[in-house]
Length: 81
Image (cartoon, rainbow, N blue to C red):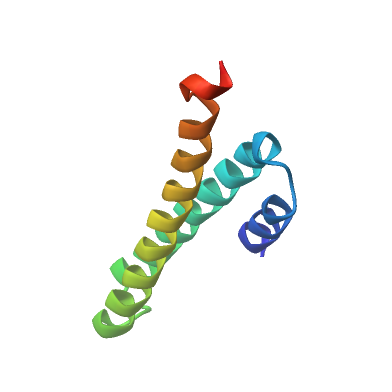
C-alpha cells in the first residue's frame, strides 16, 4: 500500500519533487520482492504463482526505474543547467 501511495503522490507533483517518492516506491517494491522470495523459498507459494508475481513486480520495477531515469535525465540535460 505504501508503494501505491508513493506512486500516487508522485504522479501529482512537479517533476523536481517526484524523485524522492519514486525512490520510496522502488524501495517498497524491493521489500515486496524479498517477501515474495521468502514465500517461495519456504514453499508457501507454488512456483507458477511465484513466476507470475515476479514477472509483474519486475515489470513495475522497470517502469519505476524508467520514470526515475527520465526525470533525472531531464534534470541533468543541458537545457536545465
